[in-house]
Length: 136
Figure 1 (cartoon, rainbow, N blue to C red):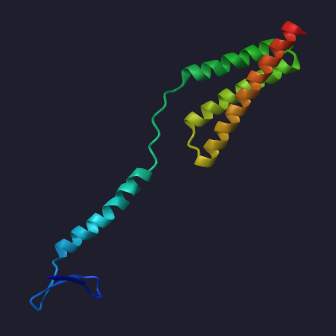
Figure 2: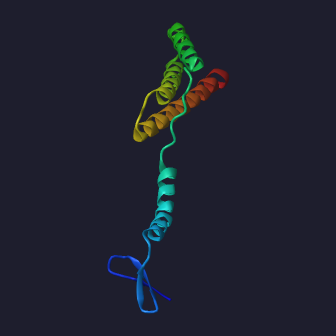
Figure 3: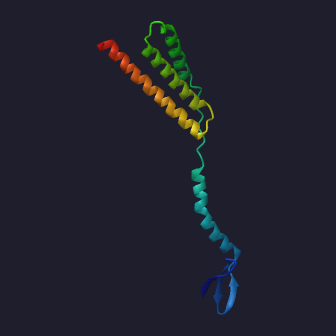
């Protein structure tokens, strides 16, 4: 028994000089086995649906509280204190935007990086303000 592939990519058997075309169901099985890994890759590359995030009342409350503290203490704050509060509010607001607005991947990356950068500036300014108040 010899296995041969003809011009139409049909697989045929040669048995005792008789040509027997392989049945379509066997060819379908072969195609299915070839296509199965591709389908699994396609399923694995689908983006995961975003989980529904709550209303984030705590985050909104912290943003409002920080804004009120900044507005009340504006006249007594130094420029570094003001910059620290502005960076903190910006970071919290960007976190809210990232969670609740449908952003593209590029926009989400930029919002995330900007939020982290603003938080880093706020922490650095806080450390600088504390150093100036304690040691200077």
